[in-house]
Image 1: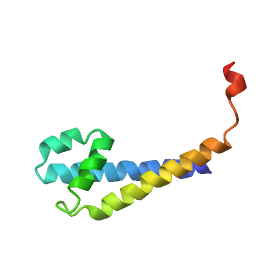
Image 2 (image 1 turned 90 degrees about the vertical axis):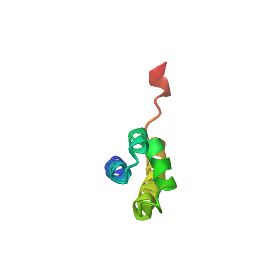
Image 3 (image 1 turned 30 degrees about the vertical axis):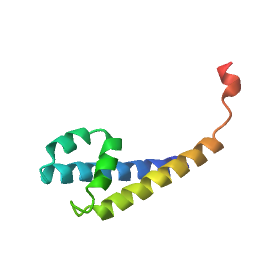
Length: 88
């Protein structure tokens, strides 16, 4: 169940990233758009230009999805079986 939730959150994050890329290119920010191919840079530049591009709502959603992704993945990892004996 956690895996499905994690997948849905990841897809939502990818959608927000693509929307940010499109918004940067539409605003004529070609260099920033190319640099934003790396999602971390896209996230940072998206927040830097959020008000200028009228993109605050998408950036808020993306931020919530990132936090949820971290929480869900930590929960998923804590329910996984211990693999230490298999490594030896």
